Image (tube, rainbow, N blue to C red; front, side, top):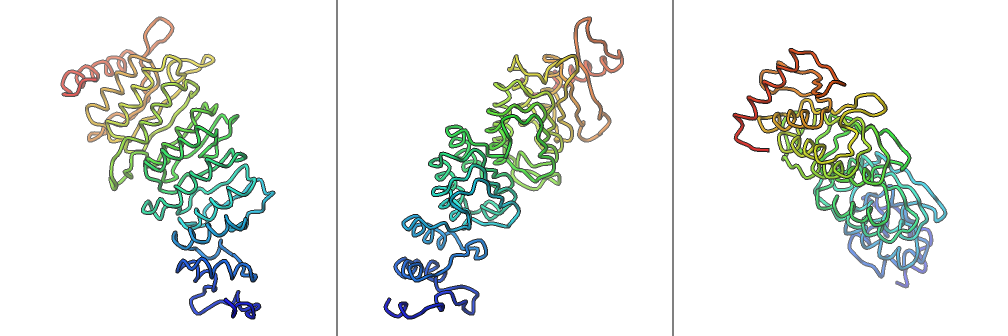
Length: 353
């Protein structure tokens, strides 16, 4: 280490690979050397270095011991915006270290690569741990980072305990538009966490991949995300407009949503709010017989607006209003068509709802 005492500004020299001595020490987990370099004035420019998870873990450990902010966040800073910066798992680890020491109330990490396209959840786990000990943070937007279901559930549990928004939805916000953002099942779980605490009345989630498949059918289908949203709808009756179109929900996802609406007696997705009918959009979701039956059964039981696409023939794509009682009128041909369709599907479908 004695040679470092005479190194001067050389400790910050950039080598042939574009890295400094400090970064190389972290890369090879030479903690003693890294500490010595920091003591002698080595600079940290973590935002531009893109450390891997192992190097970031080493640097974060030293930063915690020395009380050093690693990602350029000031101790008295209240908000930080890191959207769309291509941040990876290593960056998430360093940010987690700063969150523990700082006083941020809001941080936006949306639309990054914090999981390296769903392959590395190390940074997300560190973020979850940091959220658990940070007492000031109220918003941590993590949408659009390809979280897996398990990591999303971990974050949602922490957010529930700490009262943190994981999607940037404010408590007094009434509308939210997340259309066409490439959101997956993990993001759906984060959104469901926010729905429990928020006051949203209108939510647009159209054009995403909430069940893991895109509009071309690529991906692996899982209903855990949409089921989490449906479970939230069972206890949250505040939504008056919900757009889930173009999400490849398929039968399982659509059935979960319809059953949630049927089971929630207070949902305002049912009949009337201040004299005006409200709207649920489930079109373009690859419905089979079970999904169509669930949709029609839900329309009859709860009398909500429903719009759907009959896959294959694509002969019906319209708003259907199914209401009973003398307060609501409906065109006779449309009513008869809906009733007949429901009977045929319900009778011949092998699945019982």
